[in-house]
Image 1 (spheres, rainbow, N blue to C red):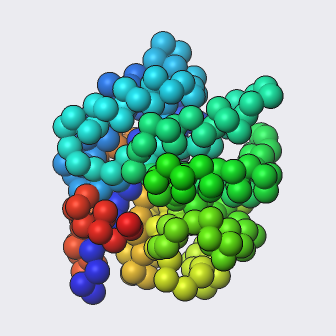
Image 2: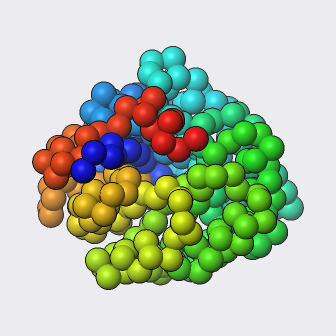
Image 3: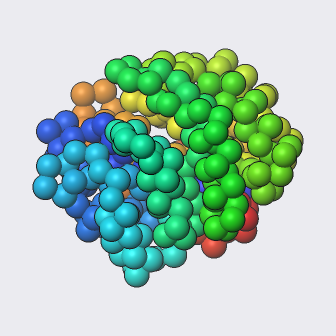
Length: 273
Ligand code: ZN
């Protein structure tokens, strides 16, 4: 297979803590440096959440996103993908607040289309949010990465694509094994892939122990892949990963062994834009 594979590194997310893995980055500098190390290991894209630098609690301050983005761009050309999940934001202007990272002009932003029950809360993404988020990203020239936690989210994306609210090629992240979205079985990934509209780009992630099986399938099926502490903090059962870059090294090595060359950031840009 000739097609290069794009590796995304999701270095923090909002759930893991330093207590779970001491290498988890909290401050903007730690988060950016983790992403830069992942770039050196083969990642072309950094998917970024931010934390309160003191407490490590999930944060959503524009200034934190800005500091991470600027530091990554100072050191390397990897694509920056900022989250708009805004999981813990409350109050009257949730949509506006969630869309603040878009105005920092990253290369990409995550776009969560549909609602889904997570283990302890509703991940609330009403249709009005999805439409406004897609429009804003389109206006600002920021590529949305559509996160699909179950097949219905793909159908909702299809509607936005058909209405011209997402520019081609649309990019999907198939999020497998997030409880209580779709499970991370091979059959479920094959089904999700079969539901994708023609001509789109797709990547896959697997949560926890499903990370390695799901990225292996992603490599074999010609997709792109995501690894990092947002999805999994273990190298293997009972052994913590030393850092995010180690997980990228494993993914890059696996891809190369299976005949997929790892894409540079410049190649990723060409493929996704
Ligand atoms: Zn995320």
